[in-house]
Length: 409
Image 1 (cartoon, rainbow, N blue to C red):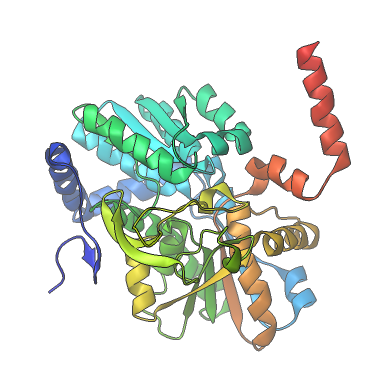
Image 2 (tube, one colour):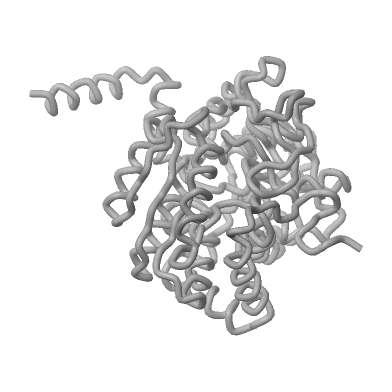
């Protein structure tokens, strides 16, 4: 019998003694909410009135004609409030924070979407808010930092280690250990100690519940394949949850291939040979680590996938053969980004574009009577600096240079 908080050999709750009482309280509140139909109803009502649920399903007619093969559908989480799927989990946790009677929330963020969503939730519910973000991510996601601060959050730039997502998570846990009576840590993905993987997956399942109904209503049948990018895995688990009991639907997670799996400069834990079982940041999973168990630096053009670990739930589904994992290189991501923008007038987040890469490779191999579904976890507005630089856009560079001269004048 699998222990509570474990998925096969993955998961668990590896935390310092000081945090046990806080986790016990969270587990009690979450279990009660999970078994209370009124909580889910209040959650759906909140997301329907404050956000944009249900988010629509878009038939990518031009891409379908261009690529041939299966019909391509896109689940539009970019149209969710704050521009990504992150609001789902965050607003749900906000309702739990109210039940616990706490007054402050903290969070980690990489791409900044989770940080913006948490700051938004804090503003709505009246919580004090602190966001931890790696210094490298602060630089490449400056627009999101601006909005977090305008929403009233304190954004702390983490200078430790690789200055990316894993370092932000470490800093958030240190904060929580010293402020646990008043503070809730709003974990942004399906990682970390129990109950976070289960809790975030449950709240994000609203994506898959909607998508399954929409595919049947619009397409007349379930998709042949479902694609989602995977960093920690929250958007992937969100949409996969709707199809786990449909064995004819193949679930495909796409990790960050960075500069190539052979270069070591990537963030692919399950689609490469570089992932090893270990314990880090409170849970047991597959991590990019060396022979001494030290966590390696990661690389991705997308800040949100630039993470050393992956969800214990996804690892278990991978072992069972229920989810297949692939990787997409930075170069492939930029090609898919450009293709989607110019063909459909839709701008995916760079994270989401990883899923598009694999769908574009495989859709042409399927029958025209079949369909594939891509979870577009967020919009690309936040990535304008990275995208413009990758496309070597001279007008954008001139704009930035002129703005800099104006500020320094």
